[in-house]
Length: 142
Image (tube, rainbow, N blue to C red; front, side, top):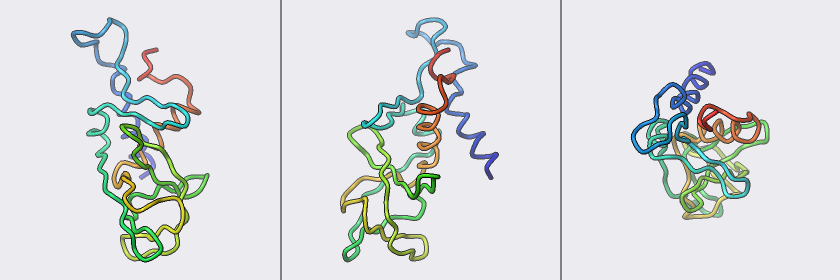
């Protein structure tokens, strides 16, 4: 499973082996993603489709917010959810209060109505990691 995740994440950088298309400067690959600290991750439409990014609004459930378990990204820094911030995706730490089948109740970190990534969150995390810890990648046109 980890191997599949790494292979699919590497697909975000698929532009490395493709020639520049019309309108692009020769030798410069288009960026699939752009990360700005505090603002989040901006993906091209192509990259969003490639990773299967889907979103939904977080729903209130009593005093908690109920979201699909698929939205939660378990990282070394704890449980995280990607929240839409304009056109960007910003990672938010969440506190899980309860698990109910395919859903989880979040007691801290989200508000009702927040638009969250319910599919593709793991790939957003990998793209963010590449941007902040991985140095310059193929998508940066090196």
